[in-house]
Image 1 (cartoon, rainbow, N blue to C red):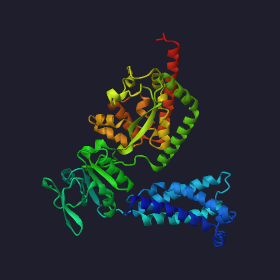
Image 2 (image 1 turned 90 degrees about the vertical axis):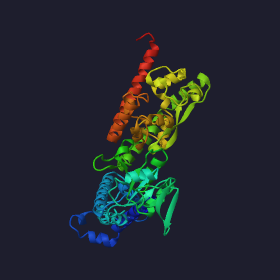
Image 3 (image 1 turned 30 degrees about the vertical axis):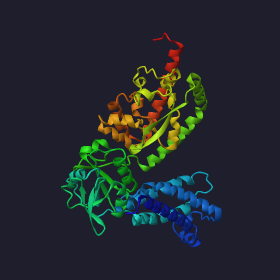
Image 4 (image 1 turned 180 degrees about the horizontal axis):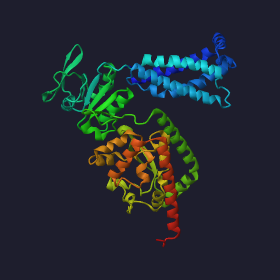
Length: 481
């Protein structure tokens, strides 16, 4: 198996080269002469392009084709027919997009005759190229078990039907080697029962090397106590190398799964968004954040002045939040509490989030929380790519740990990028109700789409406007109740 990035590079460079050659061939005089004898196509005007014009037409075509083939850049095992059909489908999408470009007054669009000839070449050669470089599913599958202890590995092995190459575990005290290969793993308590005939392939830090060296198709995760670094680190490695990750159904509530049917193992859904949806979502995130930050510049200036006039403390409050697959990132908000508000209490959910009174909240902070304006700096995190406009709201790692102790399913929120707003927020559910919040987050993950995101954003903007109007009305009429 090629490493993940090596395969991606091979697929991308090959797509670029095949596309460039296809367009260049369409302009060869001998090809154009042959095309002129064809029925219907031969009646189309034949145009030529050289120099800069040819280069720009090749560049335009390449950008469209490369974008259309995005689903094929992920390294995962595919059969010949599956690869061929998927590549053929993506070629059709690329040609449709190029034909659409041709209807606009764009200087470097492909002439119709050129598009037909180049398209024919792409249909013939691009699927063939991806069939050649594809990862081949191994006969019977090539599986490794990855766990936090050899004992846990031995327990999960009983439910693995396919042939197991070996296991990866961090706690291996002693090993026996033959011909430079680890044969049997031992722990402090001696040989683990059930692993007598299973090779130990190394520790967790070597997982990436093991996946590449042994051409692994499937990794079965056997973590009794899945932690943020080991468990989700293993998932990240599997994702990068296109390796199918499975888990025992007893632990399936801690992850997103594709199918809960079948035997004791279920497949983990490492990529719940389709590639095209992910691209459109990212474009929407960048556009929304850019426009919002530009439009809100006067509001940002006013908020900054108000916070400084109130108590001269810091303008922003920064804290760590949980991101995709258990990673963390730093998020900023306009400060709404007195400086060093958590020195005594530590990380706790504010009583104000549940409609109560939190004495740590400043006068300006109360206005910002009511109107949601304290969230504006998080638009920068959206631009950086740490957050999306829509998704499960990220919690602080300390609070995540507390909630996880009661809700194993809480980790399933980490399989999508956290959001500025989400389904829980538009239903008025906060961190004070983690069970309800989790239900809304899982519903969003299961039904996520660009259209769903737009509906949530519209409802959130409406609620923000309504809350602002209500606050102003109550301020102007304090006796109105």
